[in-house]
Amino acid sequence: MSYKIKVHIADDHKILIEGVMALLNTEKDIEVEGYSLTGKELVNWASNHTADVLILDINMPEMDGIDVLRVFKKRDIKIKTIILSSLADPKLVQELISLGACGFLEKSCASDHIVAAVTSVHKGIQYFNDDIKSKLFNLYVENSKVDTNKEESHKQLTEREIEVLKLIAKEKSSLEIADILMISLKTVESYRRNLYKKLKVKNVVGLAMYAVRNKIV
Image (tube, rainbow, N blue to C red; front, top):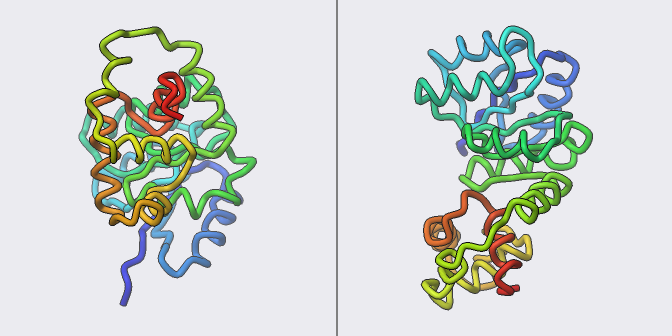
């Protein structure tokens, strides 16, 4: 019997929960284990339960999604979280990432991305829909300042790390990179972690921004 990714959904709209459940339950490798209708209910659930992936709305009664993530961080509750929201301000998305969110989907496009998001986040790969990627990229451009030491840091990269960085900047998934370079998925993830550490960025948008700014792609 194959393992199923267990998902918990937190949203105050029951109809949305039912829609997400219906979509995810058609996948043989994913199982919705339950849901919460308020932030407080979710925090209480997380005190005694867990899941592989949490799909979390921002606007919820009793405690919003941001406060939920703050509580999780304070209590060291580790659950891979995808934000599902209509609030797509890139600065807000940045804050959510800093609080531990692994992905962000706008509700308007969720049905096209939600299965891929759950699968990617479960594997430890951040996931953002295309519009969010673009907004985050533009925010990085606006906020970027030249740091000589950081700009020179790509000289510390190996040829293979640069190859991986180029493919990440071209929005290739880890699986696609593994196929292109004929290496294992585990090796790709190792290169990805090394790139985060060496280039001092936190996500794939940061890697893409770095590659463009330094004319690596």
